[in-house]
Image 1 (cartoon, helix red, strand yellow):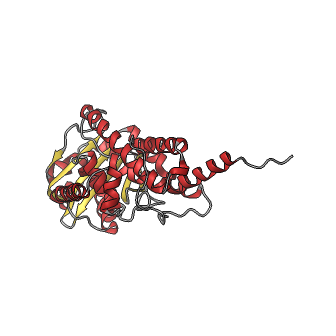
Image 2 (cartoon, helix red, strand yellow):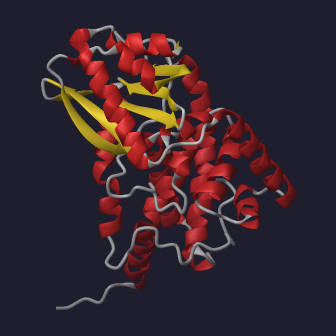
Image 3 (tube, one colour):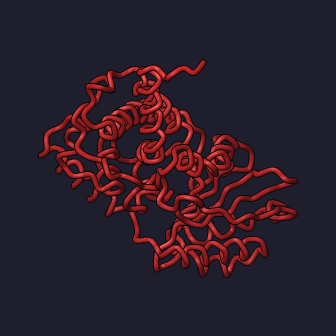
Length: 329
């Protein structure tokens, strides 16, 4: 006996199709606001639960509903995350994500707001400022759309985005292109392995900084290391650090990175931020949970894009004005 699917089953299938088609972008929004792949995944999961429970027949624009809910939930999580990070031991860096299958990270129209160095600077903004900046600069939402998502006036949104831009421009250096970034990173790693301090100093700008994210792990510097000479010396101070390791190139946050393996286990992620003047920031991630999150992110975008027949990366035809979203998000 053949059974026809019930209307409820059909409706749920449509809900799944819509959600999975846009899941990559939802993650992209949440990740940029939070700087954490794990927290962003939690937000996206909560959005799915709310999407299941909502009266979808009353939702004029499903994609606008999903984007609005994601943004508001991410802001709430960012507020609590700021408090938790006050107890973090040593420098905190955003969790890197693998972008080998999606260089823009989450279907964004502009990839600049994905680089680790910029995400780190974004942490200095309030969660609402961060969300407004991300929606405007990474995903090209209009000011009226952002105002409706954040439930603020149009005037306030314009002021927030302008203030965020000014703050970031004062602290963020213009990046080199991807090819030059990869060359500088590879040269840095090669010199560090050889203990070539002079070559390292030639790559670094005078006020370069090294940040080691280990949350108290032994061997990770608990304060930023400032200055060309100190950063160069730190990178070569422990010869045994480089001895017997396996280096693997990775694509992280739209830029080149290196994953360092010891005895077959990933122990350290390394990347740099560079301008035309040279490398100005060296970022080391020793935190095991962040390294695990990076490795887990490797297939995220491929899975999301392949889950629905016909779904395309960055497919945002219907990313319109958020006409309905839950007030509680």
